Amino acid sequence: MKNDTPLKTIDTFLVGLGNVNRNFLRILEMKGERLAAEYGLAFRIVAIADSSGVAVNATGFDPAMTRRAKEAGTPVRVMAGFQPGVTPAELAATLDCDLVLEASPVNLDHGEPGLSVTRNALQRGIPVVLANKAPLVLAFAELSDLAQSRGAGLAYSATVCGALPVINIGQRDLIAADILHLRGIFNSTSNFVLSEMAAGRDYATALAEAQRRGIAEADPTLDVEGWDTANKLIIIANSFMGIRATLADVTVEGMTHLTPLDLQAAAQRGEMIKLMAKAEALPDGGYQLSVGPTSLPAADFLARCDGWEMGIEVRSDLYGLMYHKIWEREPLPTAAAMLRDAVNLLR
Ligand SMILES: NC(=O)c1ccc[n+]([C@@H]2O[C@H](COP(=O)([O-])OP(=O)(O)OC[C@H]3O[C@@H](n4cnc5c(N)ncnc54)[C@H](OP(=O)(O)O)[C@@H]3O)[C@@H](O)[C@H]2O)c1
Image (cartoon, rainbow, N blue to C red):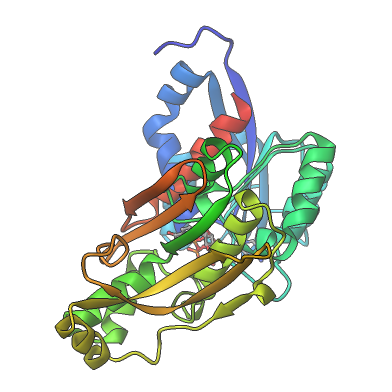
């Protein structure tokens, strides 16, 4: 499809140059021409940040060279354009740019650097696309109100189940629905580890495999202790279930106490144990929110979300019972979800 509108250059600030944003650079290498031809957008990376600092180049960092340099172990602080003493949040408050892509690690204590980066960019009317859940988990209402009052886009479909468009479906396609019940497997690291343990393999090897593939959180206790799943449940609850829930409203239990024997005993009963998120509507309003290991009949939709799969089941008063799932074994689809959010905000 050819787009006849003039090409729009999108000056972009990448916060984090880990698995996700390096894959975003890879997508620009693969699809840059197509994004220009079909969507009229040319993403120019004018600033980058990692844990060593920030660098700026108003004429644009080359995506392939930047990605390869970072993959070869070069930190931003030795790249051209390094800005000594400047933090990502300070840069977001001053940089001349059209878009911020935030993919730094989750920090549930203070949300930084993602929270201040997001605040500072939105404050100036600059659209933000998040893969990092922490800013939303800690300050959903503040950030969405700020985005609205400043007329700045805020998109975060990459924060829940990678590329599975759970947030998009919930916000766009469940118009006027009341969610009666929602269940999901939202964390592929823990799901993969559980599937491997059910097959008799050990916990540490399975977790190491998820880390090697770039799927596990920088702090993998977030995955296996259930907090990553709870984060996603909170983002869902706030974005399309009409409630302002926080982590304090979720009962969270992890899966680290489970052994291969527990999983094999469940299999002999015709069941599978899954780390499941659940939201049940309460008769007097609101929801009961929980995350924890749950034994399911082997034929259950979620029991059949195996290994690298994640899935969600949503029952609403208007749209029946929906099932969605994805197989995602590497961070490329999550980076693509950030791209989709950016294109949808900017085209
Ligand atoms: N991986 C996935 O499949 C996936 C899926 C959905 C959502 N997410 C979310 O996306 C985010 C990024 O994930 P990832 O897998 O790319 O993580 P990652 O590989 O650990 O990369 C994190 C990046 O953030 C940088 N960073 C750390 N502290 C920073 C700071 N204070 N200021 C600026 N940059 C900082 C790191 O710098 P260094 O390079 O110097 O260490 C690294 O480049 C996380 O919030 C994660 O929850 C990931």
